[in-house]
Amino acid sequence: MSSWSHKELVTLLNILEPDLVEKHSLESLCNRLNQAFNKQEHFKVGTALVTLLQQSDLLPKQSQKLAAITFLYDMYKSDHVSINPFAPVFIHLLNPSDDVGDERYRQLPILKPAERQFLTQLVGGQGKEFLKKTAVVICKSDPVTVPQVDLTGVQLALAERQSQLPHTARSAVSGVIPDPKLQDVECNELKAIQRRTIEELLIGADPPANKTVKPEFLRLAPPLFLRENEMIWQDPVDYGYITYEYDTTMLDNDEIGSEAKKLTCRACKIILNLNDQQRLLTELERDPSVVTNLGLSPAKLPDLVEYNPMIAIEILLKLMQEGSSQITEYFSVLVNMEMSLHSMEVVNRLTTAVELPTEFVHLYISNCISTCETMKDKYMQNRLVRLVCVFLQSLIRNKIINVGELFIEVQAFCIEFSRIREAAALFRLLRQLDSGELDQGKGSPPAVTTK
Image: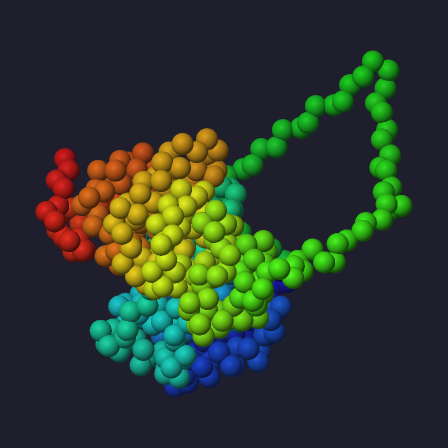
């Protein structure tokens, strides 16, 4: 990441000037930022914006903070939000009370309800109309008038990405600590002091804003390869003379038949590109009855789920609509297949689209919990526990399941993995349901009392 020059920093701070932010729409401010900095500089700009957000006195006005948050989203709006390197910032801003996310973002400001609703719309991909307003108007708007957006898919994808990071990376904290006892200064001096502080934090070959404090990773020196006489020098072997023969007709099979059948067969073997996915979905939409002649047996369903989960969802929905006699077998295979992000996504989408048999959902949850408990690899176990916790919170908050019927099993699961933040957050949600602070959802039987 390149270092900041004085001219570049002045350009960024001028865009965040209170007078400019209050008079111009967020869309206009984003255009100014994109004109001033190219795509290769976006990560550098985003890192600087996070540093400013973490220090409440450097961006004193709420409208400035909202503009900076909008910039973090807009610079990567062409990519899925889960790929945005600053997605953990959004999740922490939306869930400041939960012990989830990266330790480096603990100093971020707490948003007001109207600002949190705006960020929800932005992350959900529905904030285009809001960008035409100024930050001041959004801060003063009524959050009740803004429609709710389900961010379950984003949280699942982000939990999957964060679980792949090493523990040392997830345990780092910012090297800049705000002073809780700021000295009172006169207003005419405040702006000059803010500018000077920002320059000292961001400008230089190794600026303080880029430094983090994290556990030291000790790497043991490997032992020498000892022999009686001497070490053996090994020369790499050149395999360049070997040629490979490729079977160009590997995916061609004249016996497959219809276009939909061909695409379904390929979807069980490879990830389809967007054009092929759209063609298959169009075929299914045009003639739903074709779903019974795709050649997709229950045994092939796990492969389809792992390679193309969106196609699997649409095919299962169409099979249910057509009243397939094998739908119970498909559900049984889905329940007992190896737990993964894609299988959870398929089950989550099915539960929100149609009413699935209660025993199927309960069996799948029990299978997920059992898989986590029996996993020997600690890294994989922690990763799966995070996914299961986010998945269960989604089912509970969307009132898909009656948690009272699984209360004891889920509570024991949370206690067993209480060291993991997502499990602790799920346990707090269970306690809120138990105490009556939240509605328990469908069925709503009497709460299970715990002591």
